Amino acid sequence: METMKEFYMQLALNEAWKYQFLTYPNPAVGCVILDKNEKILAIKAHEKAGLAHAELNAIAHAFKRLKPEISMPKEANALHDFICKNHQNIFKEAIAFVTLEPCSHQGKTPPCAKLFSELGFKKIFISVKDENDIAKGGGDFLRKQGIKVEFGILEKEGKDLLKPFLKWQKGQFKLFKLALSMNGSALGKIVSNELSRTYAHKIRSIIDLLVVGGQTIRKDKPTLDARLCQGKAPDLCILSHEKLENFDHNIPLFQIPNRQIYTQIPEKARFLMYEGGENFLKSFKNEMDLFLIFQSSILNDQKNVTIPLNLKPLYKNFLGNDTYGIYESE
Image (cartoon, rainbow, N blue to C red; front, side, top):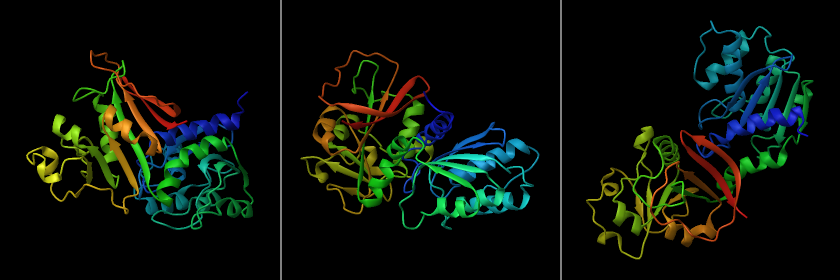
């Protein structure tokens, strides 16, 4: 039977998965805040590098819930300082569930372990210990401040959440994005809905490289930008037997200013997303770290994808009428 500790940690994990990949180069992290009576005050995540960490985001949300009349700054350092100066002990004896050990160093944003100490938290439950030399040590710091700390709550699930971060930290992380109709076809220019495409565009806007095949370019004549989130269009790597100069350069993807287009994957690229259909997936499925698969609620009469590939779901959710999942190969 699931314990209450696991229940609250699962809420934190689920929230973090919603922002998976979007926090690059930071890890996806979730945080749940309970008051001293164990009532949920906030369930929040780190949403983007440079913005508030999950812990600060959750505390700010809880603060606003308890004191809705107060206007708070948005910038992370200013927000941290504001809460430390104006909390009036409203978090005394509070409890937090965090998917990754709170950081103990000042980076672009303030140390989260120090914030818990300043606000008088009673207990911090943590899924995974941070092994990063710069960020680790938050648990020890909290214990020295008299706060109870417990590691290992849903640790395996917490480590699953961290897989992309650990890969792009050490080298290259490769994600394959695939959109399917309800009956399993990848054919058709637009397969998934706008919410799904917007999520994919958000990922495009922060990756180092988008990898596509020549067949997709010739057939779909795509733009391959991030317009649905008003983001930066990604640099491209076109893997094809055909030379780059032989493609029709009136195709929109070639019209993006300042876009780098490669024919081989550069070593400097750490986060790569592959996009394509059945043949492209068949060629590169064994190289992928994870798979992002959207499935619409629309049936069509196109040929289904038929590839022997055994996938294990790490996370599944809805985007409007679409479902999507993040999978690893078994």
